[in-house]
Image (cartoon, rainbow, N blue to C red; front, side, top):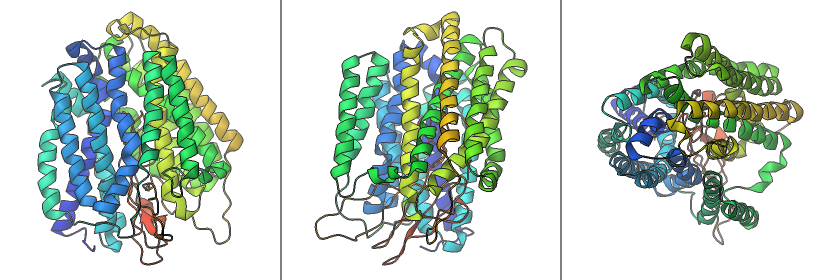
Length: 550
C-alpha cells in the first residue's frame, strides 16, 4: 500500500493502531497500582494477585509470535480487529469479575486478545504506508505510544481512586468500540501471500504449558508441577529441534553473543519484573500512598527513558555494547539497594526519588543497547526472529520473578494486608533483585563483545527498539523456498516489569526467499518481491515501568 502520512487516511491508520496498542499497554502498566484495591475488594490473597499479573503475561508471551503469523496469513487488519474485540470481551469480564478466580481467567483471555492485536499494530503501519513515509509513521506511532505509557500510571491511579479498580479494565470497552469501526472503515487489509504451510501450534502450546506449570509450582509451592514443567520444557526443545520450521530454531543460539545477551536479558528483566510488582504494593501498603500517588511516584524512570534512550543507543554504537550492558545493570542494582530506605514514614524526595533516578539512569544506559546488541548478533535475515526470542526471554523472566519472589522471601498469603509484614518482604526481596542484576552485569562483562562487521554480512539498521518477527511457518511438502517469516510482536526493549509492552513490535513481509530485515531509524523496509527480504519495523521508543514489555 502507498498511504501517505499527511493524508486523512494515514492519520486514521495511526489513530487506530495507537488506540489498539495503547489498550494492551495500559493493562500492562496500570494493573500493579490497582492490586491492593483488587485484593481488598475480592478478598484475594497474595497468590491471587500474582496470578492476576501473570495470567495476562503468560498467554500474551506464549501466543504473541503465533498471533503475528496469523495476521500475515489471514490478514493483519482482520486479526487486529479480532484481537481488539477479544481483548474488550476479556476486559469486560475482568471489570465484572465477582471473585479472584474469574478475574484470573479473564486476565488470561485478555492476554490472548493482546497476542492477536499487538503484532498487528505496527505490522499494519509497516505494510500500509508509502516507503517514503514509513519511518516517520513508525516514529509518530512510537511517540504517541510513549505518551500513552507515560500517562498510564496517572490514569490507572485516578481510575482506582475515583470510579474504582474495575474501571482499569472497563475503560477498554469504549476504546475498543471506537477502534473497531475506524479500523474496518479506514485501515486497508494486507497479508503476506508467501505465508502458507502449517503453524507451529505444538511449539507454542508446549512453550506456554512449560511456563504455566513452572509458574504454578512457584506460586503454589507444588514440587510436582515444577517437575512436570521442566519435563514439558525438555519436550519443547526436542520438538523444536526436529521440526523443519520451528517457532524457536535452536541453531540461532550457536552465536555466543546472541546467547550471552539473552542471558543478560533474563537477569535484567527478572530484576525489573520483581521490582515493579513489589514497588507499587510497597508504596501503597507501607508508605501509605494512594493508587494515583504510587503511579506518579514511579514516573521518573519512564521520563528518563523517554528523554534519553535514543542518545544511549547512539553512545553504545560508538563505544560498543560491553560497557553499557555492564554498567546499566549495576546502576539498576544500586537503585534497588537504595530502595531499602523506603519504608514506614519515608520521604519521597529523600528516599524514593533518588533510588528511582539511579535506577532510571541504569535503564537508560542498558535497555536500548541491549536490544540493538541482540539484533547485531545475528545476520539481518534473522533479525526479526532474534528480537522475538529476546522479547520472549524478557517476558518469561518477569513472569517467573513475580512468581518466585514471594516464595524466596518466605512471604505469607496475607502479607500484603500488613504494613509491617510486607515491609519485611520488600526489604528481603530488593537484595535478591539487585543480585540478579549484578549476575547480568557479570555475564555481560565476561561474554559480550563488540561485534566486528563481516564481509558480505548485513546487520539491522534499527537502533533503539527494533521490529520482531513472528515464527516462520512450517513448510508443507513441496513448498520449499516459500518464504520469509512475518508478523510482529511487542517491541524489543519493552516496558520493563514483566509482560510486556513497551510498545508493539513489528511486522515482516517477505518474498519467496525473503526474511525479515531492519529498516531505517527503527522502522523497517517493506515486504519483498520474489527474492526481496521484508523489513521489520520497530519503535524508536523507550522503556519505562510497568507490567511488561508489551
